[in-house]
Length: 399
Image (tube, rainbow, N blue to C red; front, side, top):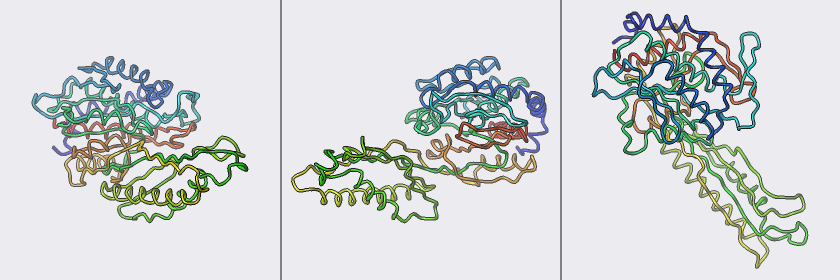
């Protein structure tokens, strides 16, 4: 069914009116969520809050899975019992560690708080869509399941959605996966940027900077390795990046360190290029490590090298010609916006990599300072962004 026709139908039109009429409730949900810490691997309390909100709205089949994902079904969805479900999701977690002070404050039109846009906006928008569709008893052919996922950010490594779509899971039969992440009304993430995050640790005997000089020095070797990594040529198409994000080691200025380490983030839109570049990276590290080992004093221990994968996000794509992306583009144009198809790393990575139609959307409004304690949200275009999500869900679930 065409988006324009869906938008005019009752009770969809009534649900859209409710989104606009209850916009202050959406903002309150954002503020309430932001006040609850949800650091990596610490989303339990915010998950309880979401579970209670699902229950208050009147959703069915409420559950919390083994990892802490919170699930609930729209009560009027699934009128065709054998239909594959549509998932509407938003991630629960933030990047901020537990000790981060949280103070929600307003400054004119802006609301400031860590995580207020990423992803308290997505959580609040999901609740608003669920509330509107439930209140007006919108009957949908496919089951629509709302999920608050854990572990989307940083070291979480998409653990919530990876668990959801694990081998043998019935969710692998999902018809469409739509995740609300952050703000905006134009962007449609239909390409998943894959990443491999690697920790490299070098080790040696250590010792006194004067008395033991000549034993292998992990810090010196690490400098040579970083220089070698920096010389790796990366393709421009598909875009591929390699970043050293963290480094450390040593105990004192006058001691040869026993260990030195770096953590790297390797990204590409192409799974094949990601694998090829990782192979080059590992070869460069091996060669540079062996060279460093030849420079030690005779009879002293060799340089130890440990490579460990600490993050693995799969790449993938939902083609621009797919029904789900066509629906999302039409819904975006319905609000007078020009749709932008982009690549990003979101919860949609996992289903995209499996060939499940999946997209990520902003949930309206504007934001800045993302992933900083000065993160802010402003509500220009906020209700329209949620209406867009509602229309996409309704169309994907085949009224």
